[in-house]
Length: 158
Image (tube, one colour):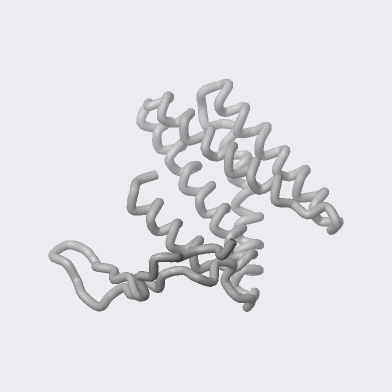
């Protein structure tokens, strides 16, 4: 994943609510998944394995965030475990075979959580963040962003 995509995800995270954060994790997983598949096609096995390890970290994070007070969490945990095993299979065999099966499951879950995030109208988790205005000025080859409210204290209040 390149720096521009990391910056875009960081911006989305800073302005997102709880269900939006889960949807962003699925998008991050998808980016690493795409990187891994592209690297396998290009014959760059070491880079593909690094991307697969990042996929595994994202799925691990999703598993840790489950709230087992809800029955659906047990089902999600089993699905995440299945995805982890398939990602591990791709790492072990150094090919995209297991990742394609994991992709099928994660795409379905990602679509579902994306719908949930669209319907969630709760406030963003981070209240004290900078506001980004995009499109006010344009560079020669890119869209410039301006940060508004450059306060010294940003993010979570402790």
